[in-house]
Image 1 (tube, rainbow, N blue to C red):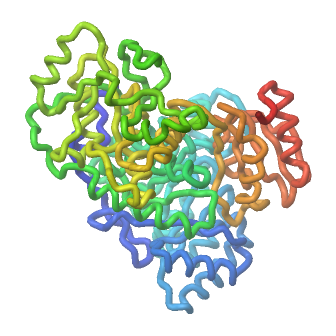
Image 2 (cartoon, helix red, strand yellow; image 1 turned 135 degrees about the vertical axis):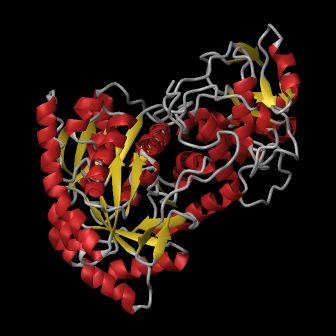
Length: 592
């Protein structure tokens, strides 16, 4: 256990991390500023009118910072006209240029926009999937070369008053980092710190960090480790944090994945600006991000009423292990131990669905909580927990419904896990008061449930789950299963990693994602990545079984894992060829 590392001041009550303020144009990020909402446009950077129109629409929707891709110097040159068009319309939203691979594009972009995003994995560092051992001397040589390439950009940003984001992606770590640290959160953090040290050596502090991954577990661990490492480096390493889950996908799944990754970090006080990445028009990302920020205000007790009897965490927040409980059986379903995490519902909801239980397919409830024999306890009442601990036989235990502690679901279950004897399995709830309003807005219900339950699952806590905040019986079950899937806790359907569109995209991502889903949506447990271009392609697909990646305009490359196996397939044939590839690898089954 990393006992000397801490990413938040108090694991059982909310405190926002104290970061320094950086200015992105006229918008302050970090410090005492509200959590800023940003997004990225999808138009081609060479098309000035389309870019200006999309940026103005984002600003109108409440977006506070807008990002544009600048993949080459030629593209970056047009940022001047885009900026002029936005300002001429009376809109002051700060602009960010997204840079991958090309230092000369970054120099050009810095002349025109308020912030530059660099990815340490592919800015002045190499990614050829080469396996080699770097001696300390070779490693130092590479770092010296990076310093040479990166310093001029630091100097220019300092001179022009530009901000910067040092944004590591799990999918695009350089070979040098991969070979020393592996494909790990630690590698992501060290990669960013190398760049930050160069900036600091030139007395440039106008930057923030991000650690994005498409897997919420990896993303949460990486950000926690980053914040803990910054803390270790010293109090003046208090740079703001930009949160995001890459390639979250679309629809409910994209929203749930984002709420797990971003929401659980915000609930621990980490994060100064967020971007929700959906494979949808970027304007739809804004209300989701705004609601996520809003729900945090009500997610916790501002102070802990029983600070004296809290105990310590029962898990290591920097590496995942499922809590070791003993197995029991309820309603014919084994749970606890290494068993599947079970889905509970209330007697009322079960009865409402009784006439069609056999037709609910993947979303069938498994246990009625009222008949489960679950023991409910107030985790702040240590004596009551001790009584349960004295029971030799394992029992399912949950936090009691209450009006008193409803705010702090994550803290209540953390506290329960820290006090409860390890042999008792735990039933998680999204809310501690059941909702009786079937007409309540579904989005906050979904975001709060995903954040609360997803955060706990990613920390290895939970053997069964119960959705109480969503009154609709069918929707509450769908939500339960989709949260388990997004947290990687129970895979019951095809898993998609789909990037949000951007100006680099070589085909229509939304249409393509729908086509691939329609053809493969019945392949349970197969993970398919759909990527617009090669920037995050092979690496972000590290977790995927198969990949569908834009190689050239209208041409697709197909991957198995990280390996490209078919090249330049015309888009019209690509879905068929993907099916052939899945078949070749023994993972295809015909649609039922």
